[in-house]
Length: 332
Image (cartoon, rainbow, N blue to C red; front, side):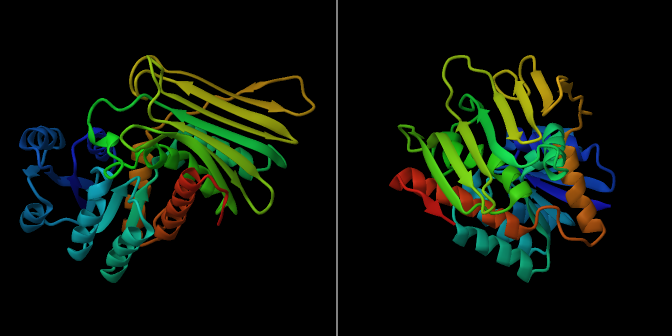
């Protein structure tokens, strides 16, 4: 039975608490939050103790790993503290803002012999798992172009997202989902070019990124974290190749769990008049992600997302940021 401490009780922290209830061989033994009211409420939900600091929790509880669900600017401090306490670490995305910071976290985990994984949950999104299978099984053939978009209104449950030194804005916070997903299929691109709009607080909240791989594959990722009006949370993937086109679209409410969700997932094979409507079994992506991490620890295997992959994804985001700021193409 793995014993877990969860730091943070925001949207992601609560989603993780719910996930552990569905994962065998795990027990949440402590909730950590600076806000006593929010922390106590979450601890009641998780049926465990509340602590105001990780130091206090580690003093009073025996823990196998720490799940960091805090704003990005706090990640490094707590990842390193957990690692130095010989706890495995699952850290939410975006992991951090610089390669130097990432290396300090990864090295702390390596030096203490604990497993470190960044929670890039989109890899476990049911439809995106199918998309990956279609591409890897050559059902699209030679790919002509991939387009992904992820559009949302600004979060209304916290204010820290508006501070680029705390969240990184849309470039880091949601663009990284689609960048990571494409990386998980194609690896490191050779070229990045981004254009976008920076908010009055300094966040790149509208970004369009063009990526090119060595084999000629091209993709465009459109990201927005400041859609206006009552614009719905929207996701789309479109991949077109010489064997067919795959198109997935989803809309929800203010965020993905609000309002009535509508989705369409279709495959258009070349040379056939039929259109295949794809029905995908729905699973909880947080449960799938965390369960995979838990299995890696129990079975003493590498984590599903090794640290070097998360580091390269961060490199892509930093290249995109440089492209935005310097109006240039960046070679990787």
